[in-house]
Image (cartoon, rainbow, N blue to C red):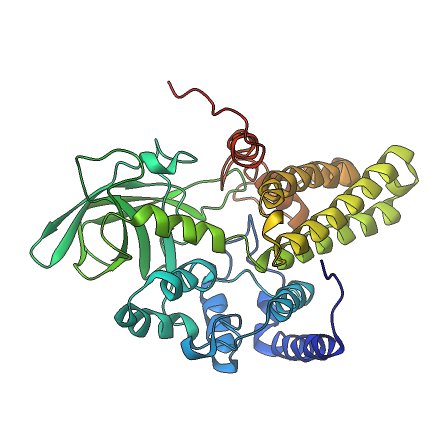
Length: 391
């Protein structure tokens, strides 16, 4: 495993840092540090303008191949870009779903016509995407989706419900997992459909969170339609494509996430030094443990991103590790803040970043596969233990 970076990579790091620091001033100073987890509904129009700024400068999809509008960055350069973006306080990406999940999926599985139609809008920061996976009875058990799609002439007609859909209210399109063969169960018979959001037959309802925001939504499909050709991969092969999307979710951007974690930890340490909590030996040890945990995450992510296939199984531990660590960091933040952490204005709450951190991280051991599901994955797929009985 190579943890260091070459002189060429370090020069690239400086280029990225200089551009970000210059770009995140002036009209875009407002978005600096905003729009992260627990704050994703903040400054929507301003962050969309920021996406267009990234697109104009060629940074929106920098890791994509050049022929699809990216810069064709090496893996190490992608890591550097995500780290420097977080270090500079770059706002939460308004088109995270399009850039990180949808685009790479279409590049890997889509037709030439789909690439020509959909990728340029993401590169320019002009078309926004959301993800239609989870349902009320199919969260971690994704293969149990009940949303149906039937072919009528040249269109798919979709009926069903999705939940926990980030950015549904502001997205132009959604990639939807639906059952196109009603005679099948679980993995077979699923298809990966691209569905326009602005149409009759789609109802979007916000889900109010403990933070007072509503950055997740329920989406109801009641005769919603999309063109026959808007299927990525073969009809009935949606499970394979969906798993490909999930694999892209845990790519180089993980290092950017960890840099955001480092920013949070640095803020907590600074507060502890200022208010005297750093003199408490228990708090001091918890701060040290948090720092150690973050270093373990970085080493683990770099190992997972290496080309060694023997590390694939080790990578299955990453999600449960960072989610549990981040949840504990939120609790540490409140203990460092003390009574100040319990004070906020009346509803709708004007929460500080660390208060949002504490509240939002309650969800991180649930979404993307709960800790219980992650333990099953580790035991069955990584360790080869007997499968859990399915009742």
